[in-house]
Structures are given as C-alpha cells and as structure tokens.
Length: 327
Ligand code: NDP
Image (tube, rainbow, N blue to C red; front, side):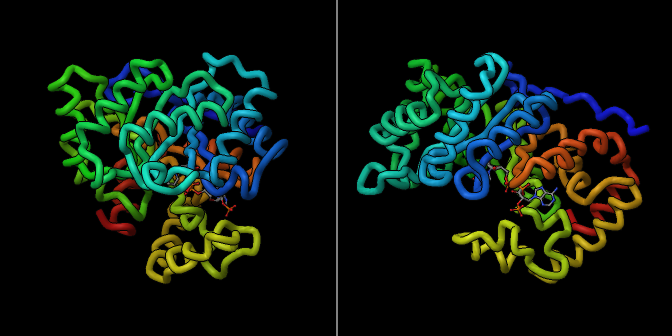
C-alpha cells in the first residue's frame, strides 16, 4: 500500500508573521501559454488540496493574461480569500512608453498595482514585489511608494526580486529611517545549479534584517528533471514559441553531466530527480517557500511529493550533492 504523503509545512516569510506553505505554485510561462481555463483550475486546486497556500504571479506574465487567468480560476473555484496568499510583481509593465515600462517610479507603481488588482479581480494582493531593481529611480522614491501602497491596503507586504544584497539593505534602511513599511522578502533564483546568491551574497541579510525568500525555478526550468539529457522534448518549455533562448542552458553538456549524476542520487533515495531538486531547495531553512512551476497537473502531483524527500537529505546525501554540483 502506498504511504500517505507528508503533510504540508508552513514557514514564516522571513521575520514577518505571514505563514506560507514550503511548496507553492507560480504561473510563469504556463498560464496563458500552456494552461488556461480548466487546466489552470486543475493545477490550482491540486496545489490547494495539498495545502499550498501561496500562489505567485506577475503583471508581465503573458502580458497580464496570467493574472487574469489565475484571478478568474480562483473565483470559479470559490476559494475563501483567507485560505490563500497571492503575490504579484511589477517593473516591466504591460503598456510600454515612458513611465510605464522598466521602472519603479511612483507614478508607475501606483498605476501598476491598480492594473494588477483589476486583472486579478481582487481588492488586495498579499505580497507585492519590485520585479527587478531600477537604477533610474531614486531608491527613496520607490521605498516611499511601496510603503504607501501597503498603507493603502492594496498590498499587505512588499519585497524585491533579483535585487543585490546592497540594494535590499539600502531599501530596508531607508524604510527604517523614515518609519516606513519595510521589504520583508526577496524572490531570487535558487536551485542545484544556481546557489551562490542565496547562500553567499544574501548570507548576512537573514539575521540582520529578517529577509524571507520565495525562490524561483527550483528545477532550472525543467533541466533538473533530466528531461533534456538526450534531446529537447517537443512538449517542453524549451520548445515553446518565444522560449528558444532557454535551449542553450537546458542542453548545456556540463550541466547535463551533473544532472545525470543527480539522477543517480535520486534513484538511491527512491525519488524522482525533480523531487530531489525541490526537496534540496526546501531543505535550506532560509527558504520560506519553493515556488513550483508545472505545465500539467501530473507534474504538480509529482513535485508536491518532494515533501516526503526533505527528511531523507541527511549529511551524507548533502555532501554527495555538493560534490556533484559544487558549492
Ligand atoms: P521550474 O524550474 O520548476 O520549472 C517548471 C517547468 O519545468 C514546468 O513548467 C514544466 O515545463 C517543467 N516541469 C515541472 N515539473 C516537471 C516534472 N515533474 N517533470 C518534467 N517536467 C517538469 O520553475 P519555474 O521556472 O516555472 O519557476 C517557478 C515560478 O517561479 C514561476 O511560475 C514564477 O511564479 C516564479 N518565477 C519568478 C521569477 C522572477 O524573476 N521573480 C522568474 C521565473 C519564475 P514543461 O512541461 O513545459 O517542460
């Protein structure tokens, strides 16, 4: 008889009081590209049923369609607003033109949050991220505007994505100095092949400012499943129109040699390579949540099974992984 899957764990988003499921679900590439309507609903519900409470989105995903699809699906599923945490991210914009693209100026931020809420069909998002840093707007202007959005109730917490440690600390210090709402979370890439920023660059921020992490691409866009070991499958992300730029990284021979060895580690742990990669991210206590991506519900079921694997990562296994991927 199959054993029962492990129960979802919830972790605090850094030093904030917000609790997020250690595995969460995001919509980049998939919503509006590979999934909409019933397919999107099936994935959202499968995640929710497994205890996932955090759902990630961005205004730029599918030019705003991803927010619309997620908002409509959640409304149709009839989830109570208190049962989920939803985030979105702004920076690139969807309209183009001065003040509406590649900026974190006050005008953009104030209008961008309204656009996201309209597409999501919500009164507020739980977490709003600055999707990238903006060297052309004074940091003080961005921090004041983000803090004002929190005060307005349109977002409950704010954070950054792919900012440098110095930028995050500077934003936090501006907020501290002026008694503003501080950034509580960063959303960086983190996976077996991309670990330096989370483990080294941000190392001091966790205790100094209580930074939480919602990490992205735990499977390096699918590379860590082993699906690109021999070829690029027709139905995979790297074959999607507009994502040709991913091909060189997912077919990189050196990366795939590491994946081949990780497949062996996964087999010894009686799990899939995807589950091993996801469990490894979640094993890091600095990670508040690992954002999963899935183009079909079967992948999500498999990936949620990583919960069972976290406890199997003992010191010997971790050392074996370090030897393969490097530190
Ligand atoms: P992953 O690295 O986990 O890649 C997910 C993709 O891998 C799926 O869409 C699917 O693509 C493939 N896959 C997933 N599971 C399996 C499986 N079990 N077997 C085979 N293939 C599988 O995560 P994402 O890159 O999607 O990132 C996760 C989330 O993080 C995003 O949805 C988004 O919310 C967030 N994100 C944030 C960014 C930021 O700048 N802040 C940047 C990128 C993502 P396919 O089937 O098409 O091959």
